Length: 224
Ligand code: DHB
Ligand code: MG
Image 1: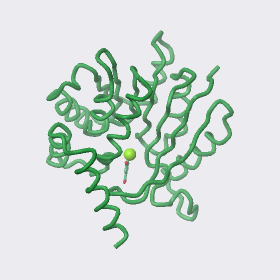
Image 2: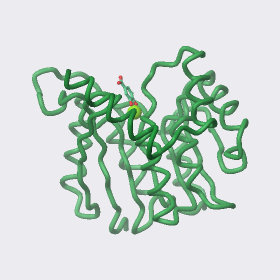
Image 3: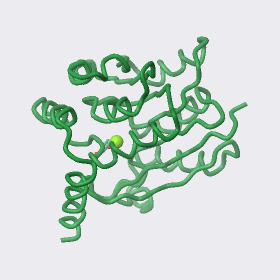
């Protein structure tokens, strides 16, 4: 019953306020037809991310975990002309699907999907002379969140916003009795955030069509 209400409210505001957009509908449809797990962000969260990109004036975004490119498209839609998003995906088939999805629309000019291990690619990025990212979205392998965070900070500038998905996971992180590699990773991630004076952060629980979960919002104050 409660879940029915969460779903109904998400659907109401998706339709009435965010409003259906054929580009995102098409990407969702392609992901479903390709048999991807239905773990992309929700439509209303997609708009939140687009708004954050606009409000911050972000120009350079890193995403860890592309899946079918749904969240990628929302971040890209907030970017100005000339802005750029690099999205990292381990699975070549998913990367191909994401590219097809993004290339159908104007996101094409703003997005690069890199196939390979995100930790490896991020480590390589720290070695080359490339500008820091304004926004980093962590949504890859949950057990690796601590390592993503460490590298994300290195790829930041003061003021970079780091958003991490799935940090509440139906309360499983709070209920420590069921420890999986994902939970251990996310618990360690929260501990790192809590104990790093270079970061200012909060956790937002969410309910909706994705059930009960949450995001970490972290601003890098300094990263020397
Ligand atoms: C799940 C959800 C996610 O958003 C994700 O990135 C990975 C897994 C899940 O519900 O299993
Ligand atoms: Mg996720």
